[in-house]
Image (cartoon, rainbow, N blue to C red; front, side, top):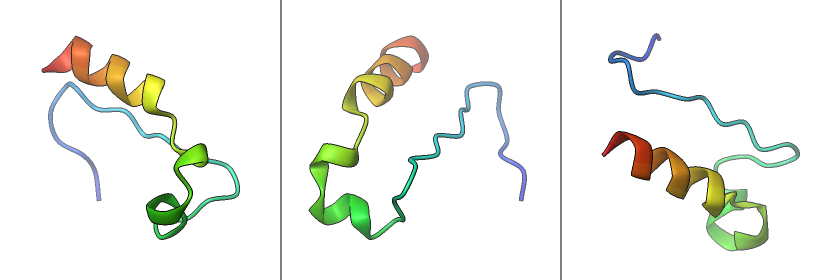
Length: 41
């Protein structure tokens, strides 16, 4: 399914799945997410 809108970015985290990110904050690239939000919100 394609994402709609111009402000989008696919972020793939190596060796992690959706559930891993709930319990392993070390894998979450907060800096990349924060930059995206600052630029697009």
